[in-house]
Amino acid sequence: DCPGTGSTQAGRAAACQGCPNQRLCAAGAAAPDAAEATELRERLRGVKHTVLVLSGKGGVGKSTFSALLAHGLAADETKQVALLDIDICGPSIPKMMGLEGEQVHQSGSGWSPVYVEENLGVMSVGFLLSSPDDAVIWRGPKKNGLIKQFLRDVDWGEIDYLIVDTPPGTSDEHLSIVQYLSVAHIDGAVIITTPQEVSLQDVRKEINFCHKVKLPVIGVVENMSGFICPKCKNESQIFPPTTGGAEKMCQNFSVSLLGKVPLDPQIGKSCDKGQSVLSEAPESPATLSYRNIIQRIQEYCDQHHFQAEKIM
Amino acid sequence: GPQVGILDVDLCGPSIPRMLRAQASAVHQCDRGWLPVLLGQDHSISLMSIGFLLEKPDEAVVWRGPKKNALIKQFVSDVAWGDLDFLIVDTPPGTSDEHISTVEALRPYKPLGAVLVTTPQAVSVGDVRRELTFCKKTGLQVLGIVENMSGFVCPHCSECTNIFSKGGGEELAKHAGVPFLGCVPLDPQLCQSLEEGTDFIQEFPKSSAFSALAHIAQQVLDRASEQSC
Image 1 (cartoon, helix red, strand yellow):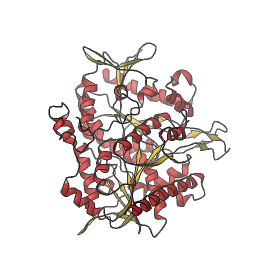
Image 2: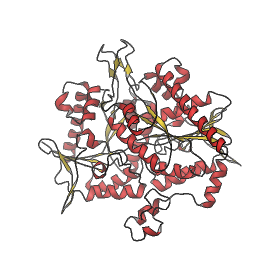
Image 3: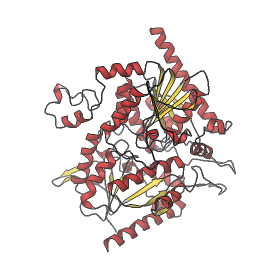
Image 4: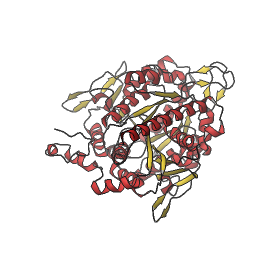
């Protein structure tokens, strides 16, 4: 029986002999072997909670959300937060966090994340590129290798929350991060969408991906949910929810709708400046929405931790 | 009119079928290979997408690079495209397997070039700079840059708000020395039309997005005729 193309045994199982896809499946296999798994487990031992931020479609505001989630959680100075950007071809996190041009430092204990605040560290391939024009034109296997390095060689230390920003889709990066982090523990995934059916179509696939790899879905965030004209205060549905938006989809798939965030020019403006809209526009409806969502994610993680402790 | 083919190589997020109201279509085989799905009154558009090959529309295509590469090669060489005036290839974001394989597979057919789409924001422009490098490194000519989602005019009071900032695409084109093809504003009518897969040009010919898109298409057509001369 086919072990499944996404399985760690893909291309390597007895059943794979003679399958026309065998070579293809085996070529991409990136699951950690026993020694690597031990190494990774050690490295990630100090990480209490891990949240993956996924989207089916590109351009829905996933990286923006990851950055704000990191800022929001780090607002509590007693918490240590890390943001890992594994969008290797399109690493936007350095710019969004105001860290453009920063470089990674090596020490005896490994790579050091770049710190925005004392309690907020960031790692991205963006820090390894010398020019903003440098393109990372890599096929899957090479991307997998870098992701493994980020997890194995970065000295994360003791972290309360590890946020992982991913590229859109369900491919190498997503399979790899789930496989590598399986030696530790992932609390779950947050999926970002806009109200459009073309985005939701891909979110359904993303939810199915999560089920396939046994990744809990913390919930869905609907971005770009309506726009209030700053002049006349009328609302426009720029991206109309023609099939019921995230709300209907979440009902159908029994996942939580964590919240809806309206379109707000201040979000993009802050991102471009490398600032957090949560501090730049603390009273805006978008900020209030984001804060509610971040709180719900925090509650989910705490509940999880509590349950895990109960078991132990 | 011209015969246009669309090849959707966004394997994880194939949106083109829905945008052209073809999501219920199936792909058939003939002795020349797969037959693309024909659309439009006069069958002037032919479409191939992984969307047509999935058993269930919500099925996730969880493939690593090598498997994606194999399918893209098949989409180029094993689809009976017939005689086309234009083949448009829609790609996912990034500079990875899909992009490398598409360029490799199409190289023998001497692509006219690439149109790069960005929103006006610096973070989007930041990624498109890398896309420009990809084009340079793979020898793909850049036909120009489109600045999408460029401004929103409130239908109630006509106030224009630059929701995703403004001007980033135009600046990038200038900086990189490539043509700037134009700005396309945010347009709920366009979004609605794409959701339902209706013909935007028939339904909303007076919308601001339409004139912007028509202008961009014209520049591509002009470039194509220059090339053939």
